[in-house]
Length: 275
Ligand SMILES: Nc1ncnc2c1ncn2[C@@H]1O[C@H](COP(=O)(O)OP(=O)(O)OP(=O)(O)O)[C@@H](O)[C@H]1O
Ligand SMILES: [Mg+2]
Image (cartoon, rainbow, N blue to C red):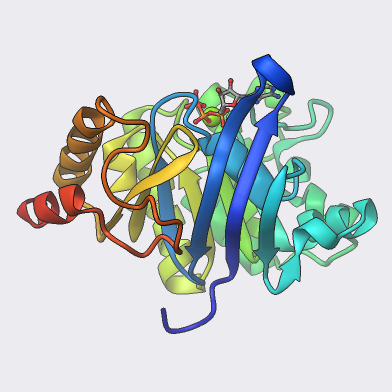
């Protein structure tokens, strides 16, 4: 990797509960996120994707291991430092949009900046709003917006602050295919043209194909990685991981625990066909 990663985790373990009922949502993750890259995270329901995002973003405490964002060790921060990190350096797009119902779309979009008393870059605001097709909706409150529009407002809110990293949990989950395509194209453009770093959870191979890289999770472990994905290569990787995970908890490869830059043989062998 050319430049140091903007965010990374080492030996990341997250356990919920204790004793018999404990769930190991993350079972030891080593991962780097490169600056100016769009990374997609895929994996079955319950494989730990949202947990990974929450732990990376300091929204949830980790059981063991470390998370570093933009040079800062998240685990060593106190609540105030964490809040500041989230407000100033991170952007979020969640499954639930977390919009403030009493504020208009425009006010929701600039809320994190307003709270941090950071001036809004109007040109950037206008570019984001136009690209997401929200111009005519800026004065509306969330209850007056469709689900897809609310999701786009949440995206605009994340993008307008130009954070170090945007974490997006299924950002296209509620969008029709045209709106999803527009949003993904815009996310990718913000990465390519503005150097934004985006980590995006998705179940959709079409969405994953917009990424520079796809990481595959299963049972709280990284079980595969695909560079320069296409819809076809993602589908193929999902297929091979699906069949591989039938005979073991994590499939072949990537059990050694090093940073996830190794391509498991199953995916490496299958991927070029799609390109
Ligand atoms: N607060 C919690 N308490 C107990 N268990 C939890 C909690 N949050 C998540 N889990 C468990 O951790 C595991 C990983 O959950 P997570 O939400 O990260 O999955 P996911 O990959 O995002 O799934 P989905 O695709 O359905 O969103 C699951 O088994 C889930 O039940
Ligand atoms: Mg989830």
